[in-house]
Image (cartoon, rainbow, N blue to C red; front, side):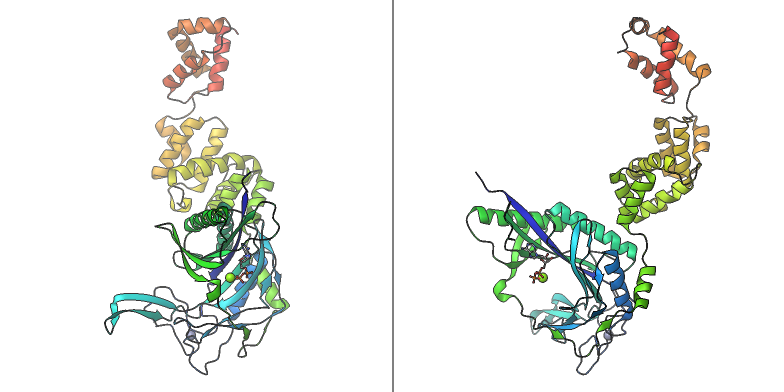
Length: 481
Ligand code: ADP
Ligand code: MG
Ligand code: ZN
């Protein structure tokens, strides 16, 4: 019998904090400015320059900790993490080692190990031949990014598949975006993720040897990279070979994994407390300010949609995790003829997440579209009142998407109103029965199977504006059934 393996994943996420200035100096944060225009002695690591911790970064760190349900340390400290790299002029990074700002907590069923603050390194730019020095291709350093405040979020190894990692990261990104603490843009590097991956035989308590996939810059690549690495580890174990602890790079184009460094080359960072900074003491005032700044978070919003509006969990999640969509939906619900009411919420949510999104395109913010929230609310109410059939309602939505406007006016102008009531519909039903005498005969004899033929006939005559249920009723009445 072949061994079954299970996957174990823990994530380390770096989030660039959206402060005005850098972590330990007063240089402005930038993106895309000319190189080396936002520097000072502190972030260039010049001898004797003294760091000062950014209070706003600590505030944002506390907000993240609160949003993730962490314990917030009343006292934490900064440490020096020593290593040499050309983008690290001091020869160490100021980070937090054994006393992080936040510990514990969790989100989306994944436990958080810790959240700490640190400074970002500068950026090495491989200038290639254009930067040739003495004939060889050169790399140059842009210190603008050096010293940018980062929050590092470390999860417990609670994730068991690539899909779950993607799902967790999506919830985390939306949460951080709603908090307003970061741009959380993976391509621009304001959200970066390393994945620690191991596998073990199902039932084994002990964790397997892990590898680390570095710095992948899209959710799709992270999921792809994890899948590739899990397959590689499983092939090794099945061949009786060990997994070695190492750091890997995944190339999304070739789908190749290459080793960056092995355990033997792993750094000993020689952490020690940063002597130039006092410990961070969190006052009740700081906690209060962070708490007051917390908005409703996506997980809580999803729960509220399910609880108060009785939305299906998938629909609630779609609306709550895409903030702009949730905001638009709530604006529409508030503009409903019946007001912000649970009874209207279900159909409106379905029209928003199905019909509207399909027409606009998945990533389009409906606020930028021609469809006013009140217009969709109106339309859904007209469908509910059977003033217009669902089918004709979709035609009305086509018009709203194309040019906006008022649903009632569009129905009137295009003659899309439901054809109903005995006076109008009964003659059409009579005509349909007369046009199909054989079918009418079978119906009269109690064989209801060909009912669809009559309904189809009536729908053709009314251009889809009749209600199928009402047609059936009228057929029965007409035939005396
Ligand atoms: P390191 O010292 O190598 O950085 P840590 O113990 O600090 O390792 O853990 C870093 C990340 O790796 C955390 O997210 C943790 O949950 C995860 N992790 C630790 N051990 C394993 C393992 N065996 N398999 C998968 N993930 C792991
Ligand atoms: Mg690590
Ligand atoms: Zn500076």
